[in-house]
Length: 175
Image 1 (cartoon, helix red, strand yellow):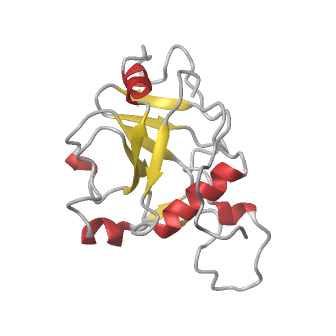
Image 2 (image 1 turned 90 degrees about the vertical axis):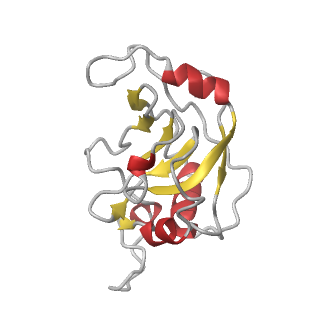
């Protein structure tokens, strides 16, 4: 970020579709220069919709040529959120810890918009959004984001951007 590095570890085994989507978007530079547009102290830091449509962004599958199959399991712009994994693994896939990585869900679907939690114990988000990773390094940067001065809509007065995203490990084949 423009404030320093954040290192995330994804739960590729329990949230494979969400993780694959996120990793492939990262590898295509989709998130580069994306800003945190919604920072709510001791709650969440949410990234903007890179498409600027206000629809939660788009999945990697919307950025690929159509496969020709009408029943494409991934959908296109959005894909079915992996909320089942959240229920099955609710003791570990939850918003209990600061630095939780979540994919925003609207009407049961996800695109590309994600957030990081800025406090422990945010159980009110459990089951509503997909937890698919955790921050493992960069907690001091996360605290700087949490302490950012924001306007009445939660927009940081000093822009906070993802400068460059580096994927260290991707277990999924490239399309």
